[in-house]
Length: 189
Image (cartoon, rainbow, N blue to C red; front, side, top):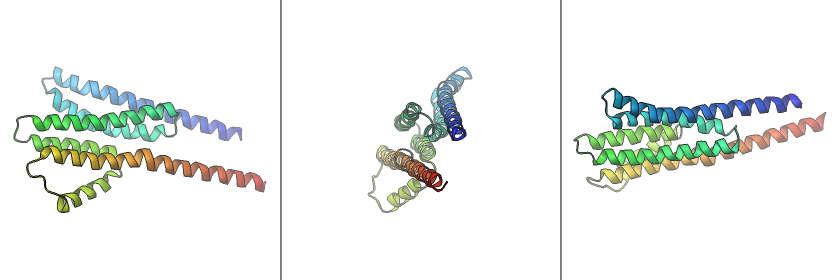
């Protein structure tokens, strides 16, 4: 029994460390890539957009690992996920307002990539929903702003349900089943 407790504590520490490393890496990328762009003559906005894409993958790892870590680390990872989702919408809206001919495409691309990665693997469901909405939903002629909000909302809802509702429910069911199995095994012996 003490071996089981010891291995559980080790696993919890590994997941806590992984979540904290991922959260720290996302902060370094958020600061480092835009700063590197300034020093190398690139634009800070382009480097920040790339940083958002990288961060979205790192945050997914942090959220996933945090479910086996402490509640505090889990809350920090959840807030980081929500923050990256919000920032992606704000930056995409800002890019949309720039006076370039390809601003709408750049804003769509950035928002789509970041939110797809944040909602992965359920982001595939969001893509399907967006295709259906595009084909059969109401048309918003020349309303790139409205399209971004719809895309963001579908991806956000899908990712939120996946990471903050479905995954915790599945983990709780798995833990309850595991405890029931352990209790059954102890009764047999």
